[in-house]
Image (tube, rainbow, N blue to C red):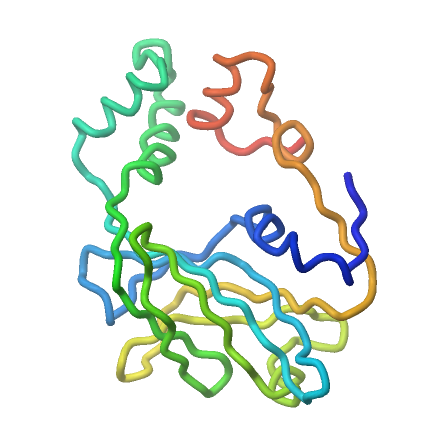
Length: 212
């Protein structure tokens, strides 16, 4: 584990967001019926000399791949033999592998709701990812957080009529001072067995998450 002073944390934002990769999935009415959007948990910081917070937004727009041929080709490329997998492992692999076989959607715009306000975000790039920043008044942030010790604010996708979807994601509010812990993932948070290729592949693609 590495302990990092928050004042020097800016350069590590994307790493922190990646470690929080448990994301909420929703279908937005602004997108086609076969497209999906994921919002990754991100960070929010106070705006210097202003009574406001700036929230980072990072999302991904894609179309799931449903063709079995693509799944079989991916399995072969990894060197996994289907006959060696249990029924449960095959099911987990089918779900895990599809995240690597999506069709990224460029030029898409998604709207989110923070409190009572709706924000239309920047377009997605060629890889389907989009990044934006939303400024929210400090008093609104205080109303949205669950209490003084709750450092999270929830976001939801919305359609043009502002009807909320059921899924949501969160922005983690980062104060200017304090300590944060940044950790590796494999064999630190989850069991991967990185020194054994076959076990690594199975633990990554074919088995449920197991905490260390």
